[in-house]
Length: 274
Length: 292
Image 1 (cartoon, helix red, strand yellow):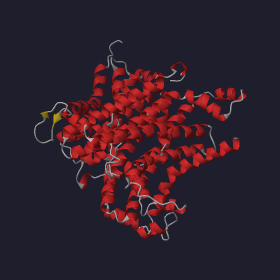
Image 2 (cartoon, each protein chain N blue to C red):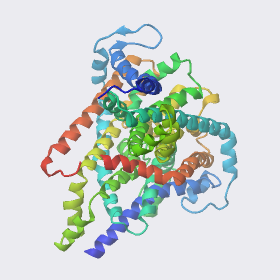
Image 3 (cartoon, rainbow over the protein chains, first blue to last red):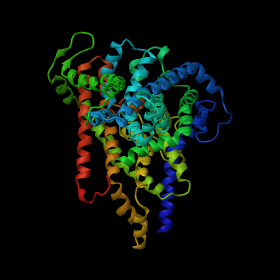
Image 4 (cartoon, each protein chain N blue to C red):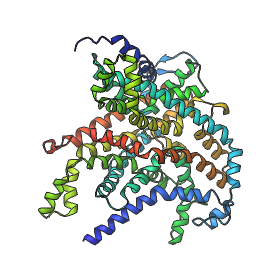
């Protein structure tokens, strides 16, 4: 029985390891293969020759470099705007007393439960009214707004755990309202900011539907849209398509391996609170 | 509560969030609910239409099929994905060799974009060049056109999502770390096997988080859209259609009133699922609920 359970345990663990990892490895190998024929004849093995040219083709045909820059601008600006607004909000909710602050927190956090896809029409209308249609700024504002509930939820609980003595000491030293925020709370909230910021970054980097909805021209196209257009345009050239997908995945994986502890502890904080 | 002398600064600090939250949550919610009762194409004036849009939707077979598919998505999330995630979380909670690395890798697919994941799985399911058919052929099993046949399309898209357990696994795993070790030591002394310990100690102790994750997974199922849009666009023969897709298509065709009626139904059904599931799952023998 013990041996059986132990074997079963490892079968389960390895199965999910396979599910999580193998498709990515397969994609990576396929992206270096020569052509569709090699994909068919050699579906699992290493490529006969490593075709780095596929990556060059993907870069040039899909204009990946400029899309890459758009995505970087959007993701970093959205994170900055989101953290600025969410940290100001969380600061007053977690460090000040005022009427209705619990209601305010509940209302903001309830936004996590709303299905954003049902807002497709109003978001389109609002962005058009703001005269921001087909601009990177539209995406920056929308992405940072969509992530406000989760960021405020994470940051209020994080800032709430900072000892009040530190702020009192700063007040005695003559720090005003704004200095308490900028000189005490913000520096002490770096872990919380990193967690909230990582969530917002991954969301903004990966977001697709709103980008499809709110932009139309190449000058504001993000990487995710580019991949979609590229894959529907060049359906016959599978290897270059795979290379393009790999290129979009790499930044997410890099960010993840730097910040995975923060992401996992961010989820953990939510879970332990229930 | 006494009046705070900083009230002006507090209000000033809340101006940005008020702007963003009202513009992108409160106003859109009111807008969707309100315009769902109109006939509107985005160009000419809105016309009040009462519940016409709802009547039309609820007698449309494709829409009803989409609701059914969303419910299948929700049930797969709540009752396949969460049990699998729980199983893996409980195994990892006993800290087998390499558990930290495994946890990091299981979570990895969750940070990759839906577009990349969808395109990757489209490649895997590809009848000519895909790895799934090549793999099955090794065992002499005939392949399928997985996304092109009505019988296999929906299960194929769902499998692609449900097998990625990392997100919920991490949450459930975190809940297990709050259980005192002494519980298990006591059970061990009383002669409980590992499986008995999991069933009689761990599961009841993490019940609150299980209810939360089942609710979340089901809510995600009700609003599912992206992978279907990218992999099958609802086909073949509408067999994979979901409400989000109907909303998108109505919007694309400038039937904005109908699109927003779809959005309203989506919000309502999502809320119903959250409320009903929480009631059903946490109502039963709530007395033994010691955590949460």
